[in-house]
Length: 202
Image (cartoon, rainbow, N blue to C red; front, side, top):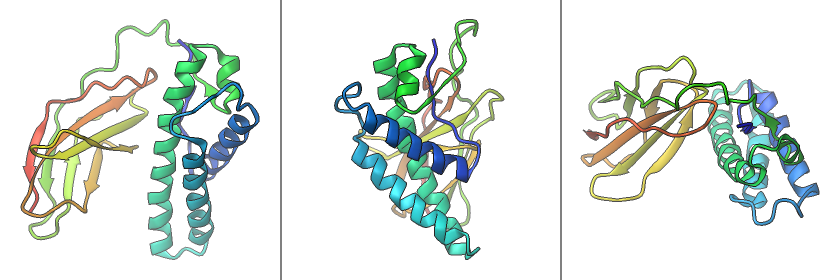
């Protein structure tokens, strides 16, 4: 089935794509009632990324890092919104285009679903740093990798999209155990999570 394509090749394309999606979904608001996430969420993420993008042109390292972070936030909103558009379009490329997304190529000839992510390893980068390196075996057809974590004993997962099979994660509570899982995201964007791995943050 044809689906909305949420990928962008580079920072400039991400900015232009997000602006186009916001413009088209605003113009065609009668077709997209109560989008999830709301267009205000997309607008906020886009505004933050646009400002970070402008600052990063000065080549200040901190500004470049912030641009990357804001870019990931914006990519996440575009990805989540693509699920809503997909549900409205049901494979109709004209509705996908009306939302500002590029229609994907048909996946009817593709055999099977996204494979289960394998080889998940979580290690502390350095004792005392609080930074974890999360690695999963790469899949050639993966467009993105979805990493999720939660404090052991809790139910809700925190999710992050990344273009690589290796991710460095910081900001977790020290001396706490966390659970981790990962999924490839292919053309069908269907998650198929790895086995859960537990790690202590030190």
